[in-house]
Length: 276
Length: 68
Ligand SMILES: [Zn+2]
Image: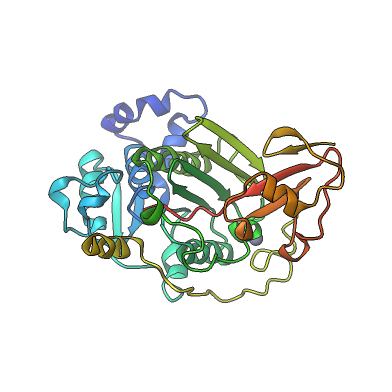
């Protein structure tokens, strides 16, 4: 389908890039990306993907906007407090770019719904805040052969990697199992600089865009880490032998999705607030 | 001997074990860190018996769970 004059103008800074062009922009307009978690990572990722004209963007989140979210979740505004995050996110994205169809899923992902959910999308962004969800997304993406961007942020640090089926390690290749509950601090316990979500979430959007357009090298087989205190990025090469991985290896032992004990960041955070 | 730890060349005594290195590098939550040496993951059960040698490249990979 040909682009309208308005689209040609809206996306002119993309189209002028020789690596993107009208062809790449059309790929973006026809692409479908699912963002799981409309928070610190998901907010900037969703905004840049909407602005870029990714034709269909799905957003999954069971939470409502809370005052303590607004320090970093820039897709939501003060007036949105109490609204489902998916609704608030959709309104912001629609206002920014009417080309984008935003599909909302006001729920948690679990072993019963995630495979069907990700099936219709081309690329998945993990913007969740807990290990059970991160392992669930990884395993589901391996099983459904979906590329996805994993990321985590805490305090002044962030990191991300990209899984593309058959092209490198998955999250479980690196981290075998979720750590026990509370063994590794989460954002609510440890805090996080708001702009960290902007840095890492934007890098996740960049991975999705590069995957869709087909330009350059993705973070497959690499973990990009960012330390804001020293303003230092490092790209760590991950081992290439994935054969022994329990989910993406040659003889997988994990063939069904696992619902690990859920630890819900925001809920516990508000309880913590209430107790103080 | 000289080894590369998280991208930096460092001097350590010969025969250094991985637990000693983890301790010296003040690795956070050491029981949950993933270690790769020369592009190979070290299995948890082999961590204690791993001895480093001249020229090894060591990376520590940390769990990072936040995102909301
Ligand atoms: Zn794997």
